[in-house]
Image (cartoon, rainbow, N blue to C red; front, side, top):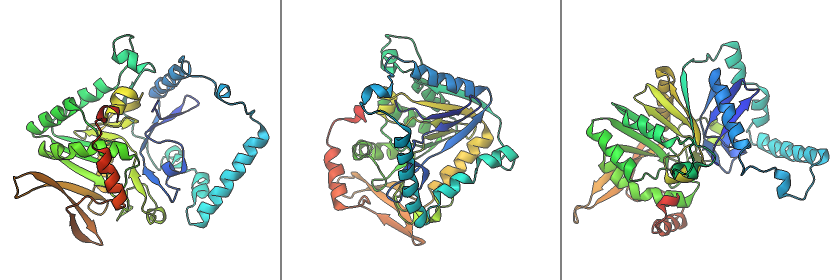
Length: 358
């Protein structure tokens, strides 16, 4: 289960890719993940709430008390609250005003008073049934979100923007990118760099597809762990100085007319193993906002732009990474990493034939 969903009183909801943890709210100096959410109200909220009930009532969902002999108590809850309070006091001492941000009621207050206007649009809910594997194998009837995503991708006419922390396309997806390129559609994808990647195994699978993607006309960007410009990143200038930034948002923009936001990465795990959820929102205005967010993230100070370099020996292509450091253009012909050990480990893992599990 990879779904991410927050529903309040069956009246409003947040949908996106965000987990609950300090690193997903940009207040953990050791690790920060870039996430995006959509605030939803109206009839779509009841549909989202119904998906929760479907998973809650599924036969694999069991009470947590069955997994532990420990008895919960008010004293234990208060002790945990105190530990969290102490931890956040330490963060505030470093200039990370998390508690202050919580009590400010922003941006919710701005939505309510009209300073941050809501854009009304048609939203299509797509999600996987809890028994996804049985549905995929034709044993049971149910819902699969992958076909809806593929249909939206196939319908692209001029431009596709994608943000996916994990990018491990299969043969069908590679053919789709090739077809879009042949139709003169521009394809731009942002994913994690080796520096910013949380999961080495997933990153090792992605490495195999970079050159074929570029050869199929995809413009490929990798986010840096050290942002040169925090504007538009969701990070404060203070937390950005720690330089442990990575992608976690999942966003696809189709012709700047509609977009997907949810929990699904563009990889084999999301396609076949995980259950996922998301919305396809039909709104040129909101799609443009997401496109602006994409553009802020792929600026040279924040991302590597990959390109092919043809070797004089046999004409075999290799990769180069273009970026900007200190206002100057820099080109790397070896993959930037946190350490030689990280580079060695990722190269060893890339030899394993496990793409279908990633």
